[in-house]
Image (cartoon, rainbow, N blue to C red; front, side, top):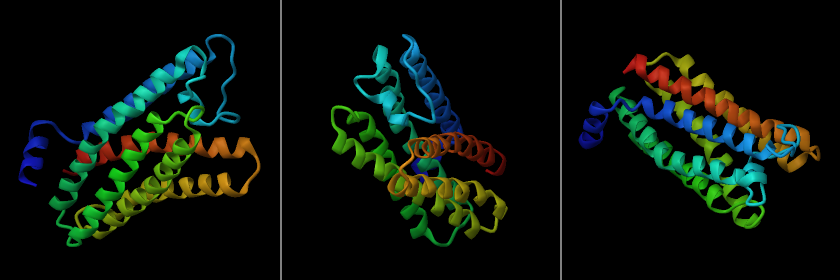
Length: 212
């Protein structure tokens, strides 16, 4: 852990969350612009996020989208390790739970990478499996993040709320994907998970900057 802490003495780990959000927003906006450049329609009420990463997407929109996923998959572990160091500094006694959260987060990051590696239109099976793991383990990561915040006496308990809210939105999306036969509801909640993830990433960055 000392080597990890020395790394964040040189570069504040909170910034990795801002970097991740910026990469995601910029690459998705570029991808949507390319997708619709020739007149093709794209809507959060009709299109899954992964439609941007399909090889058949107009104007090679998949390049920007999948590049963003891959780069974020390389950046995210540094943010996760920073949170490990952060929680340890807050003297959380349940050390095993910190590493359990980290393991869950790494699985979701790997799944995110595999979503980019396996486009939905050329490798549907692997893509779906990767997406399921991404949302499921992402939900678990948010839950355990909230629990870890509650377990420390050095941080206000309300900082756990964003993690739990995002976990609930993720759960609703997964349930709608399984049980509801309405594409508009399903895609809307998938996008709400993404938007919530952006807000949560910025929240963690600001929150950890102020409470280190």
